Length: 441
Image (cartoon, rainbow, N blue to C red; front, side, top):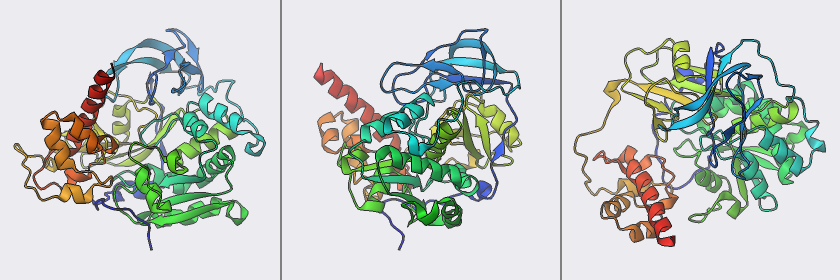
């Protein structure tokens, strides 16, 4: 029986457009724009200047802050600008612009780090940190911090192969095409945490990826088990995945380590494997480009800093002018201002939609049906959160645990009144944080 959690929804996965399309390497872009903020935590300070020559893997930004991750050149060439540029989050962020020399010269610092069996946990953490690896499931949390903060606390290592968002198939294709990198990264993480076992959770609509992963396992399995999850959104949410696989419940406001778990994305595992075995830092991404407005949807591997416009062009352009372009999935992604924006470390998908898919209404109304409550995977009450937010009752918002909202979009998806519940919860969380901060001062 497939494992699952309470609540959730069953949207059409819309993955057929790219599910059977192998990952293609994007033609090298003429220019990359690499923001100094591509992770949760302190942004990096540029370490290069205009006119500098850089190679693939050269450090171009770093920070001494504990919660940060260095940033590297994704192409070889010349730095043509160090200035604020538009970021996918809508703000202007200090960025390093590099003109590609098409030589693909690798920095001398990029070299194998030795057999992972000979590495200590501290060695692995240092390698991961120096490689600039962050969570590639979308959150962008510095991976070296997640590992170091879990040492001595984690007894269960979970690999999130659910990829539950509609349209996105970048993880799925990696499981099919490069499973040895994912399994290799898992084994390195097992060594870091001092564990003899790990579990891979994969949804039942991706069963054909299981034999591929199994072939990459060491003799006897190496303590790595693969478990099938029920296909249901948001099965890939950390807390939902932990419950499905272990029946442990992360407490309100808590992190996975609070119940002895650590969750990693398969792309993150592959990046760790590459950092240890080749020394290559995180300088590229596999991105699913899909949606009704895209002429020829694809899975593309591209250098970090590649413009969204380059990916769209590689997919044959737009069938028609899109009414919305999204970075990430349709449920949790963020709308973009256009295509003149860079792919960042956490970019796993670019989706473009035609105007006839806009289902919003001019005057959304609540009909008190309670569907938003029944599908919320965090056991929250979205309609009451909306009501107390509108009345600025921050004390009640805190009682309702609004900060636990994972912004999965399930409530808005099922709402027959077309209320913007997810957006309201997002803003309510931010306003509550501001309110508490003012109270502390």
